[in-house]
Amino acid sequence: MTRRDLIKKGIITIPFLALNPLQLLSLPFKVDFTKEDFGKDFLWGTATAAYQIEGAWDKDGKGISIWDTFTHGKKNVLNNENGDVACDFYHTYEQDIQLIKDLNLDVFRFSISWPRILPNGIGEVNQKGLDFYHKVIDKCLEVGLQPWITCYHWDLPQVLEDQGGWTNRKIIDWFANYVDIISKEYGPKVKNWMVLNEPAGFISLGYMVGMHAPGKRSLKLFMKAIHYCNLTMAEGGRVLRKNVPDGNIGSTWSVSAVEPKKDKKRHINAARKVDAMLNRLFIEPCVGMGYPFDDLPIIKRLKKYIEPGDEEKLKFDFDFIGVQNYFRTVARFSLWPPIMWANFVDAKKLVDDEEELTEMGWEISPEGIYDVLEQYAAYGKPLIVTENGAAFEDHLVNGRVHDERRLKFYQDYLSQVLRAIKNGIDVRGYFAWTFMDNFEWAEGYHPRFGLVYNDFETQTRTIKDSGLWFQAFLKE
Image 1 (cartoon, rainbow, N blue to C red):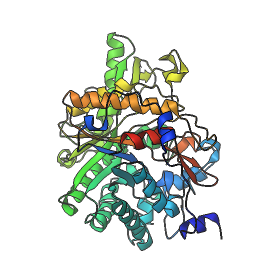
Image 2: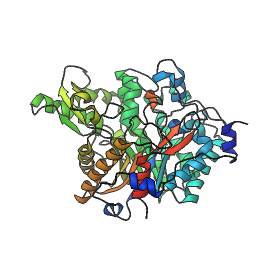
Image 3: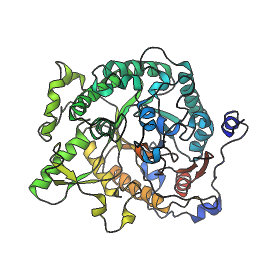
């Protein structure tokens, strides 16, 4: 019997490092705010994604996703790694959920794997897939965690991609059918839902740049996917509203503060285009503002895919907006790439010390999260930071992971979230990305974002100092 089998049967459990007073004294607590400063109803959580943690990629009737296909191809992912096992959450969910609760968090945000529910994208439902998420939800409720479900976090069934995926208008009906199934199944237990995770991310990286699944590089496909994705997001919201009428329904958007390299007209214009592409393209149609054609003329190419009635179909009145922020963007005028007549300044050129960069090469800019919260507050909905975090090089030494830089990252960013709240911005929660080190898409297993260190060979979990800090900070 393998160690995984022993864990599954409960014969052994995943060890982790618990907080004790000596560890508490050794942590840097030099912050000028408390949990209470954020308000008694403020939600503290952590976020994950199915493909990044579950593993069991071909178990119990699950179908093949575009990420299964992409990672099994050569040279698509660093070191040719894949999510076949990942964190093995499929077998260790009970211990992991208990560990999240032990960190004194309120919310566990997770996604449902579309091909685990519908192996063929549509048609026959996989009962074992439905049962798995019932067990995850029930365990959350048992330990006192709020389950927050993301309907789609990038793992499209491959059989649907074979028919065009997000570039086929039929995706609207395919997705609506999938959301109808899961919302009817879990709606009586789960009231907090997010439709899509970062549409700007998976559409641009998957269909224009080709760095993520399904690895396409086409301006034409990108334009189609923009419009069909926006229509799908709104339709998914309507299905959730119908099936979970008392639900709290939102979606999540990746947002970066955009600044011009210099205070000159050509750079300011470039920054406006970048902002339209990164921050506005997938939310303004939803809130009734339409596409930002004037600020980003290149997207006028998608007009050929707009059908009569689409303007209304693009709209949906979400209950909240999920803001996901990791870095700021500095734009400068350029004749390349032609899609925006603008490009980004290399983050390394923005800083004097590489200590100001994360392991992903992203600039650490706490003020940026304040700027994007202020920008998105203008859309008139409550905000939740549904992802924020950083990857650094972590080392497990004598049972401890001293991740001082991540701890400082969280403290600095939280101070800016609190600043936003004090300035009247309606921010109602903060979910750290992520619970534990996992499969980080095209970067494989090298970047570690977790509050919990994961040994991928043994699947042993160890709470990092940043996790211990949250545990103590959130203690009643």
